[in-house]
Length: 378
Image (cartoon, rainbow, N blue to C red; front, side):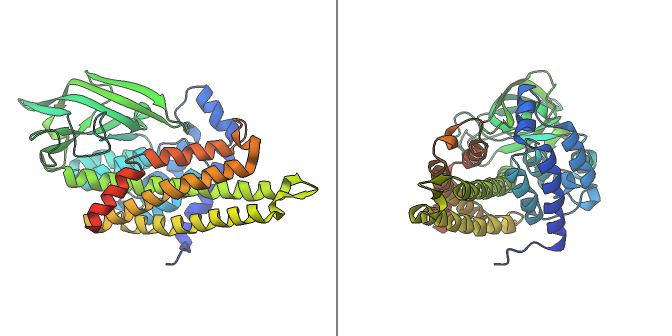
């Protein structure tokens, strides 16, 4: 597999790296959290000007027309610099939902706003009792004339507190666990009956639980075919999962770089601890794990746009499982080799570990994706 970026992808990586290294320091992130801001408006505006917010959006809708691999290149940088900006939530998940399921009118109205950053989207698929099963949806949408009344709950919705557009799954027919009978709806966060319960994930990004109580949604705001949204939902989630895996890869790369540097400067018994063979072997294993993870994340990105669900699910779940399993071990070893300082809140290593841990849980943990991978192999 060729791991070299193309000229355009190198430009994406370099441009984002410079922007985020200047604006996403640990002090800047913690200042945003202290001031209860969801993201830095200046960085968000700069991302729009650079074209990053339109990266996977078609040129016909004011985007760049990039692939999921181009998105991966950007997501690695967001993970490496621990950006709080809702790129994955709005651009990858929200933009992906509109591109895959939206009508031309919906795309023309909303995708240019996503691409220039003037509107942000968030996608709510998971529910409190779903256990990561995207087809297990208790939220219901009942027809009432030319509108639907939507009631239910969504949980762990990344980027919801700052979203201007909510895209939620709801059942328009069938039983709770039936893959058939699912539809997607565009919901305004300020609509009557919509309640957000915001919070921060461990890595500092914002999310929310959403309560929908008799929310009136126009029939024109159904995204995609009624009762037939299950395949769209799976594909949208896979796009987001592939991007989140790339974020996790960026975080792991930084963790290994910090550990390598620490082994060079920390001395014990009159010499750098990096000269001790046991630590050299441990670091070598971490780097091998990273390279394996890199190949799987690249494969997930290369298949994320693929309409063949079998190929796509297998690749995305393989990356998620490996990152969840070996990524956790890399994080544990990094903390162990740092000793006491690795446990302190002031040291940035812990921030990167938290990003990796949040990625491991988002859109299905290791056990969930291991089971999904087994189903695809069967």
